[in-house]
Length: 135
Image (tube, rainbow, N blue to C red; front, side, top):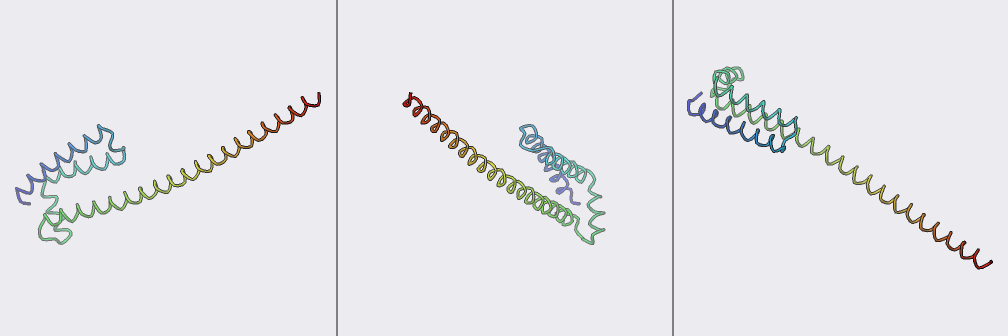
């Protein structure tokens, strides 16, 4: 791996770790996501310190240039993360939709009960007035 790429990767890994820690501290990331991103920043640091790992993996995959192997692995990771995030977003969307529907049904039921209570209250007032008129 080229020395410039190795230095760039180390600087990027340090910045990436800093941004990740900032989001964790400000509670912008939940536990699952923070562990994933911390793990990735550690992997970036290991690759920056030991570039032979990327060379070995690129030979294993049959890729001649190790930086291409590195970018391929990063792209694959990002695609997998994007798909899993989309799946989680879809699940949350469905949960929110069901929750909104449940709240709407409960509000409708409360309105019905309040209307029924008011109707019974009005009927009891009418019967009280009729009873007082007879006396």
